[in-house]
Image (spheres, rainbow, N blue to C red):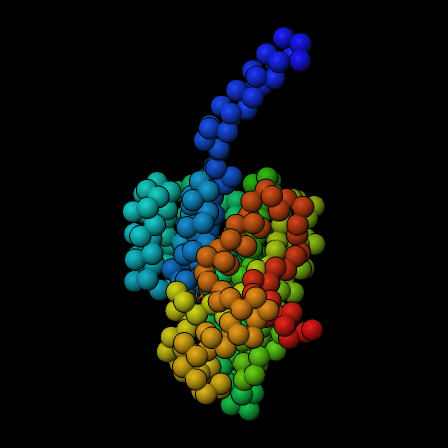
Length: 292
Ligand code: NAD
């Protein structure tokens, strides 16, 4: 090579090496995220994923004790300035509106909304009381609507777009034995997300869905009554259920809260800037295994 050209290449390589060593800016730096059900397994893992990328996170949950514990754990890791919590019931219009109002005061607004607060229930249709049916509809279907309605009001007023992620369920697409109320409510969440993707697009508000398959580890759902009922349906215990879900998936892997958090991160970050109205199943291939 001519001397000048060799010098230029060496100089360029040195500059490249310097760039590689520079700390990369965090992809969610300056963003504000609220995660409903933030004191639960998937919600807390998602909030933590956002915090690791530089976002501020607000955990919203009905369970005061779990909320205090989860918030303190994240404060220890990411600092008091980055984490807030708000105790709220997603079925209350007033509480949901107040949570966004608090965020406006504390952080100046919101950019990312994860609707995730939920329950699980199990009963054959002939045993499903109206109370159980309404509970599923109220927390899942209506709760997701209320959180989204307020998000849209705030995001449209801010005028800088935003991202909503609905943590629905594989059961919103595929039926599951003895859980018609839950499956129907989860299906409505998915369809609500599609409707909102249409409404939000002109304003740069994206709405996407993450569908977990069974996440047994870290989830409070997989304790108590739901666990007993599911275990009884399949004649096994918690470990047996986890193995069953693992074995019947294409990838033969258990799904963890961190796997769902990763998908929620993708839909919150600018790398998914051209995705809206989409559904990402994080199920180790379980839905596909059933529909082959
Ligand atoms: P989890 O029980 O660990 O967390 C759910 C959180 O939601 C809890 O902290 C709970 O207090 C909160 N919550 C419940 N009702 C509320 C209300 N009315 N208002 C505010 N907060 C409320 O469960 P998880 O596994 O982390 O579930 C998170 C979401 O993922 C739920 O919507 C669930 O249906 C969905 N999901 C979970 C699984 C799974 O197997 N774990 C599978 C598919 C879908």
